[in-house]
Length: 348
Image (tube, rainbow, N blue to C red; front, side):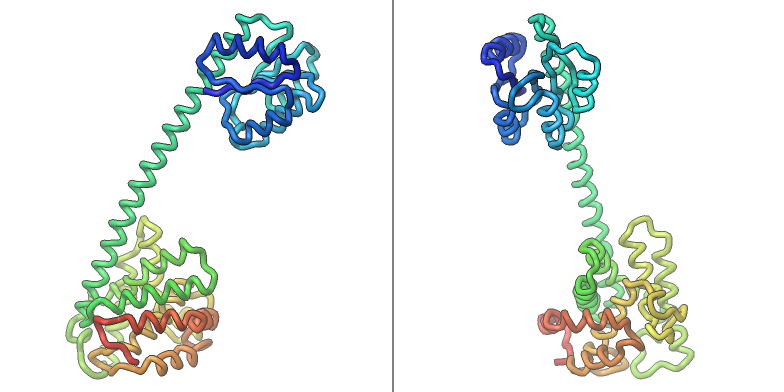
């Protein structure tokens, strides 16, 4: 423990220092100048401060008030040594943050007892704070571990769905990356961007409930088959509904609404404009763009420039104009993502 003593009298400093040293094993620093003592407390964390009331540069009340303004000294005990018995003076000192008082002339035994008791309380306080920090760190580690496991399960499930859809799993990876770039460009918070990145791979989870004959059919679907295929958004939302984690709740929004259109002509709820969750508006662009650039049983690969032009041309009709503008802003990075794909040909 470390103790700071502030008194403009060198003889008082020496006496108080000897008494404190005899009663404790604390390391003691002292100063006759309050401003110097404040500088010391800036670079050293003290566990107890004893300050004289009447000093020429700054009195004990002002010193206490200045020290209490620092977060590191919010709970450190401060003892004022004073010969002033006036009630108003003591109230002023208490309001400034004084913990206790020692009267001048002081009784050495009383001073030592007060110092020892306050240092013992401070030691217990520090131990509790350290224990709380340790527990918080352990909770943070456990939470991070759970989140990592949740993320792993999501990615493995998303890849399994892609394989069933005749893909290698790269589609969900690219959609996640592009969605994160768009989210960042429109100014969403980093945490929100990451939630979208992690939830985007589950946008088509409802396809698990669509028959293979429709899901993998070469050529165009009939109107009846299109109606069945569109049910995947509702199936996906049901699979993800009532999630207890932010990640699953975000994934539900995306699964339910990523086929809505800005102009209200989408499905399943005919939402339009800002009524469509922002997460779904972002993933809609990434999903359509990558699908256009990828080979499917019912279509050939589009050249990437043609797919880009399709996204830009659909601004204000299919897609949120702000999200399309963000897509354009991030185009060099998106193009690089597409070029880096090696597991599946894309339309260059």
